[in-house]
Length: 358
Image 1 (cartoon, rainbow, N blue to C red):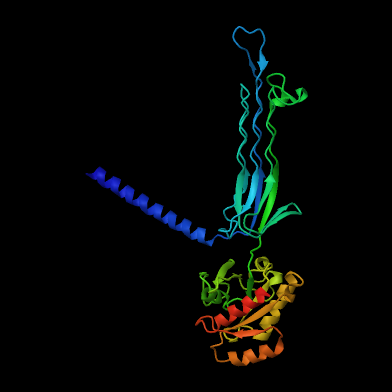
Image 2 (image 1 turned 180 degrees about the vertical axis):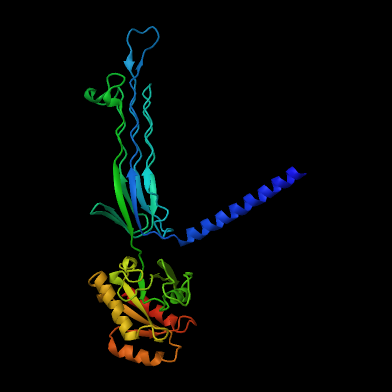
């Protein structure tokens, strides 16, 4: 009886530790976002050729029947629209080797290609050279070619055939090897840009089915989020929400401005401005100038793109006066909203759709 009790206690402890490890893994998995990855890719080695001779019974002569080895597998990058991060890309990929040739003229099978799925908007670098911009669904790139198979003692020109076992010509060739750097630049129609705690995530959750973290403190958003606004006529508008830009982000203040790469491709910028001026927030005019300055320091010309100002938190006491001051200081159109209650968000999506369509 005591032995059964001890076995049950051990089983309960094992189940508890397993559940705890599973919970930890789920927590880490939801937090992982990778937009830069270095990966080593190696094509498969070619299969060895075969030196073989066949002789019929009672025949005086024998003839060569050794076949060639199969080619090694290639390594490909292919866009997968279901992915939004490079977290599933491993650090090393090695394609399979080709099968060796055999007697009776049986060539070795070619190895299948190894396909690495990547999200849309992945830039592929080899050193300082940009190999490809994988931006469309279905795009693919051959990054490492498999090695050629070794020669047997049949077929082709006589000078290329293997002559005896152990000949160098029978050895399969090694596959190509490359060290690549993958850089993700999210593709979205509209990029949401704002200071920390301006309400970008609240607005994204109000207009789409995205579920970014929302809390009343700065830097709630640590990773980019994508949201899709669906209209009744099946038009789809993609929005990208990035972490807030603190004043001095170009000097690596706050989270820096490295995340601006995810709105660099956006056709329209939506500046989310806190109109309340409360809780130590910058005045709206100064906040807008800060955002424009950080964009221009990141890459010249970004501020020339079409833009819209989302004047958020219009339900606060001083928001109306701040709205008038901001409207008189800029030519960028403003739309007053309260993202928390949903007031005015449909006017923003209609305006953004019109700007994207133009």
